[in-house]
Length: 200
Image (cartoon, rainbow, N blue to C red; front, side, top):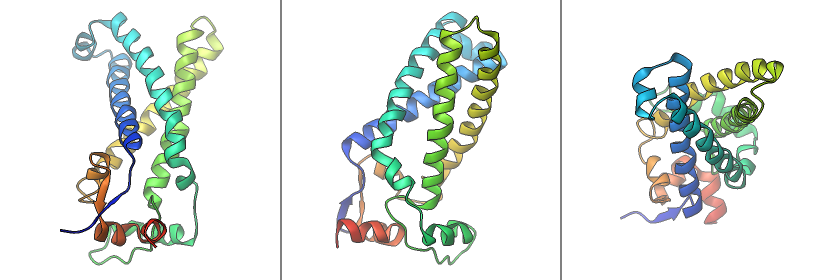
């Protein structure tokens, strides 16, 4: 059996799932608000209850998003020529025999995904609190609705892509957010720069 290496801490795994589940619940309730879908509204116990749940889950999402900075921001902002080469070959997803450049703890796609979630997640959080706390300020409400909805669309595009790439497109990746470990050979193939750092 291949040697296993730890790629995610218990806290990273826990916070990832808090962020993911809160995001899904916010998206579902937000979708219900946006399109007035009775099935979703009833699922949350009515419009008023759904609004309350949406607001308080938003607090959980905000805290989890903030804590994620300590897990992934440093790696997400670490770019070099290998990231340029990764973009040039589309991460190897469009080739049968890809020559993907060596990656660190996060590959370039994961970096862009996290930065997008951090930026648009922050935007949707701030505007969400404005909509909640300043409902009588028409100017704030107008701009907040616009930014909130744009951020919602971006996140709803990014998340399914992330799920696909972390499961079907990259077998073995999903186990990181379940067990926190991956086979050494798997890590050496996909994150060779990182594996050299942790096991020189």
